Length: 467
Image 1 (cartoon, rainbow, N blue to C red):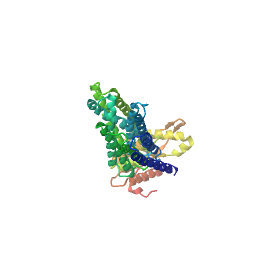
Image 2 (image 1 turned 30 degrees about the vertical axis):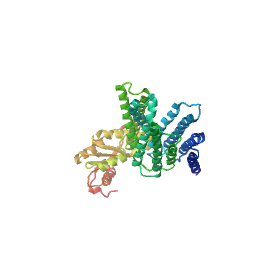
Image 3 (image 1 turned 90 degrees about the vertical axis):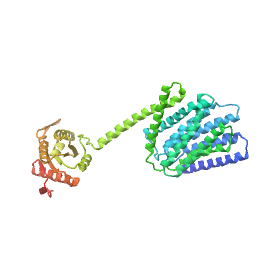
């Protein structure tokens, strides 16, 4: 509640500043420090304050990027406006750098606006930075050489001159993609209007500067600050659910990486074609891509290990019950075996759980030796094992006898030698019979083998009602 009141106060104050600025422009047509330097740039600062104080449902990377973008743009505007009023000049390069930093920050913020998550993974962070750095520098670099033919000044000055229109076009393209991929919402409306207002004022300024018709302090300049305020206000609304955000981020990073590779390739084939400073972002993009690759491999290995653990018994390394039942539901023919160790509880109680665990491991190893290559052996829990094998009845009987034989000789543990027996029940798998019924039939046969002491028993209709 306190945060809502604070943000409401910021919005009212910002709105009052905008109205005051518009009225002051009409009352005082001549440029002056109060209106053009202080009041104008204070609105941009308030836009950054609104962004930094965005509610918790907003992705913090997006909010902080919007806030930083509005702040650095306001600083650049303040420095350049200062030079219009005072003899003590601030180097123009400082304001140019502020304006140049604005675009990558906004690109990061817009990319993060594709999602409603409050935080993002390391891969998403790297993808966003790769998009912001790679696309901006590459697009500007490939326009730089032709522009240097028709524009005067150093390579850096020409670079800054074309960065603005390229950045504005990319901004408009990104918001178009955002509006196409997201359902219409208050956030998307404010975001679209904000970018449209800012980019339109920027392009109008560029066109006016080239045609020598731009006037400092014109009413069209207010499109910049209004755009910044609308962008920050969009953060106050929750983002619509969007399942394409990760794909957009990943695909965008891939495009930026390929473009950076092309940039460096042209630079290698034609030395001196690009100024050296324009290649730095390309190298940064490539380096970030390698870092991203290492993170991706690490996450893939982690996910792979987690999938293995999810279907593996931790003690024996065999499949677990969940994986066993999954395979049982998919198999169409063969036999299902249930194996239950006899007198395991006494061994576990008398010799300790460590000895019991070691016994289960050795039993699993012995069962594995006679399991067919296409078979699926699993520990179902406790001292119970399961086996799926694509065999006929004769082979199933031979397999049951082989499993019994694996425990015909003692097992050596650290605490001494022990003997253990197993009761085996097995039943045919029929695609016309539910997998649960197949499991129940093998279970009935196994209990009959244990009751009779025969060691192994195949299911038949005669033991259907044995409990």
